[in-house]
Length: 84
Image 1 (tube, helix red, strand yellow):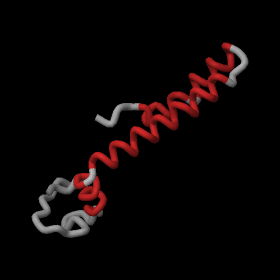
Image 2 (tube, rainbow, N blue to C red; image 1 turned 30 degrees about the vertical axis):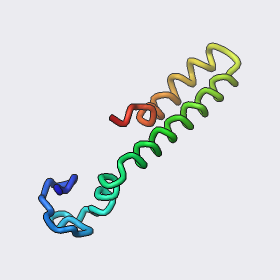
Image 3 (tube, helix red, strand yellow; image 1 turned 90 degrees about the vertical axis):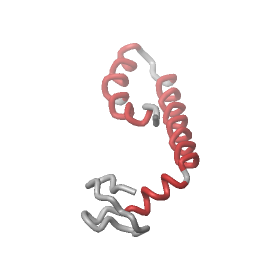
Image 4 (cartoon, helix red, strand yellow; image 1 turned 45 degrees about the vertical axis):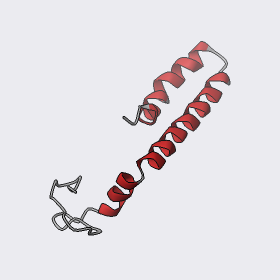
């Protein structure tokens, strides 16, 4: 396994990278259970999408919608991107 922070190869199953100290346990968990993590990300994006839709439905005018699109949507865009 290679450290995602510094690229150092870790041949032993250690908790932390010997070169930079990055916690490798989190990386190992994501590699061992990718389906769970992907499903969790999809669920979170779905919830964000529903919350945004509810907020948009409650807007009263095109002006409010424009302001929402300019102010809020750029902030949540990263959560709506595909995990691939």
